[in-house]
Image (cartoon, rainbow over all chains, first blue to last red; front, side, top):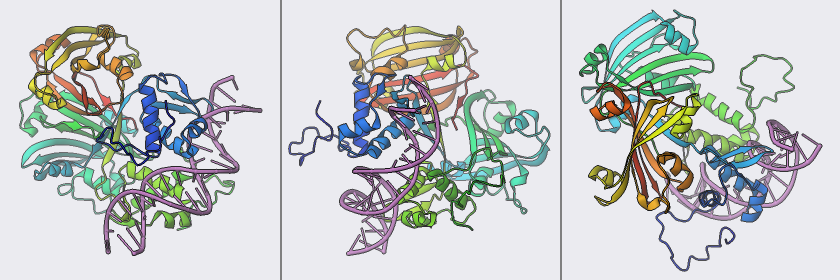
Length: 249
Length: 249
DNA sequence: TAGTGGTCTAGACCACTTG
DNA sequence: AAGTGGTCTAGACCACTAC
């Protein structure tokens, strides 16, 4: 096997008109490492050479190798630990990233018009499961919002949200005009949170709100978010049939 | 506002016992930039100072600022373009990453025993929608696999897969012993692919296979994968009720 | 304790894109 | 044409951790 960036000398003979131009720099190293893994030169679980060794082999600086290996580690292909070295992941996971836009933009992105109906807004004691999820004392007063999002005037998404009122400014935002999600994204500091996706048969209430037959399969998204250790909001989104969540590759 | 890494001089007075220790290095810069965005010092859509300016302000090398800003750009908080500079994203998207392990490990990770029933295996002409999805000529012969995955002996997941037979080695793997997914992960070069999640009511057939009432809401995952421009596989996974897909924060 | 990856620096050149 | 981010280098120190 030839050494690495086989000096692409003027690319005199167009061998394979690849759709992607041959990568250069750290991306070339990433590609070569991936190639060796898939060619089974480096087996799952095995330790690969150190950054310094690879830098010598490839004739580049260690930082460049580091960039490539770090990228592969973030992608789940490699596992790295100081002193232990870099190993080929034994059980590679497919890692997918989702872009979750604000609902309004999601609807408008399909070329549909967006609408919003605030069905309920009330300060209520947090139900036990919600309080538990958010790590709050039971019966903490929370703002309860039920919102129907519309696409071209038709039900698109039914949202049930519990929101920590301590976050709101004194003249509270008008959640009949701007969705809570959209307001939060722009006004509440960076949040950690977890998201879960599942499926559920529509309850009688959900069916009525969304204009569906009871029992229709709904795609459900549930989110909890915190700012630092302060609970912000817990929300359940029930999407009308036809909704698909896509990964960005 | 004081300059940046207010030299944490021996941290003489423990002011706030933060759960997370104050970040240092490029993470501190990332934190500071995020802080300025959320404090509305830098508004959405606005251009922030150049890397060089920030490096001067923070008293560090430009590469360190670059690391922090690149990270925030990957997270969707900033948008960067050469010559144009770095802007605060106008419409921040919540970006979530999913780890999608092989089914066997997903089941075992819950402490349950894993089982596998290969219900069907046949070489069939690709149906039109499958061929179209994968970019193959209609009626290309594909290996059709229907597999029921079990957790503690109970139906967990029903998988319907179309697989390009050109990829298989001569003694084909025994898909009754190892799931196609698990075999592919270990033996087929890195793939690009897209994944879609949705919900559907169980068909009569799905209900029977999974031991459910027809119409039960099922969580559906559909994947298409390619290696370069060669189609590898298209698969539909129907999960038994109770399944939740979680993001890793 | 010694080996390995994580990070930082100061400087440089290059690629892209806006004006 | 010029400004900005993208990347590379050669060297250095440090943090973590397996041995």
